[in-house]
Image: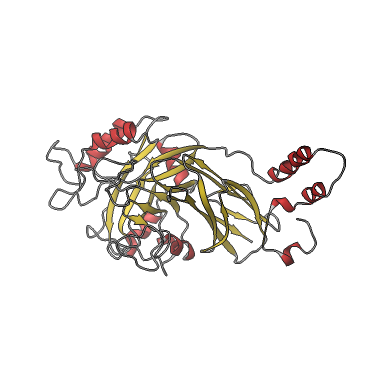
Length: 398
């Protein structure tokens, strides 16, 4: 890979063409074939990064209870996720309107006489067990026209106040700008690719872009227009690829959007059946650590309750990072595991698939081409059972 004409002749390359590998292939020094093959493998593995320093946690970040338009009470909601789905973290994200014909979240809950939002926070705090089961304070806010349905996540319960504007159900540019200045909240669209609700991501300034992107829920997948697992309607300019192409730098997440007490679990007769799950690389399983990992975009999304493990790096840097070239090549690495074998892995660069691998759970390879001042990459992963996973991006500047 140090050939003088390398960059002139190739755009992508493989570790199998390093100089030592080639010399070993042509060697005839009396060693056995197995001995040479062992050393060949070592020359390839030398390009892989060190083990990921963070622990991997799994969770479902969107669901509802009977405090809005769901069927189960908050206690049942958390127990189901903890005991049945066995997730590490979750978020109860009831609608701020509280359900049609019912009191909003800032109104009084007839069952307990408490403000609904206060009951949600108290219940989340009661089920929160740092290191074992993390409950992220959250809610779903109607935010027409900028996001329509926007899920808001808080770093702590102490500062988790409902964010109301001049008119409930709507959001102005100045209100969104004020929200974007807060470092203790994350927010992003839900069912972004549909016409109602929907989130047009073309032409808006970077500071008005989402910080999270719900790429899948039971109702559909929102990677790109007219892709697999489509929702009931679709609008160009409202998808994950559109967000990235227009300058957004969100964390990629998947959520179930459960309304019936089946968060984190697959249920065949509900939407596409698959739960929406998020894998997060964090220091530990606490509210602050999970939130900070989401804010740093050390996360990926996948369909279905069966766990999927994904590690994606460029030049040793993790998904979510913004980096600069340190060499004339970009070393790309992925490792994929879990309960289902991999069918296909696509490297998406600046909105299109540029390299794919079949039946390859682990690879290192190289990109020699700078297409833009800042290129963005993510992985699209298809599993043998038809499910998908997607990573948060990595941005690389010249």
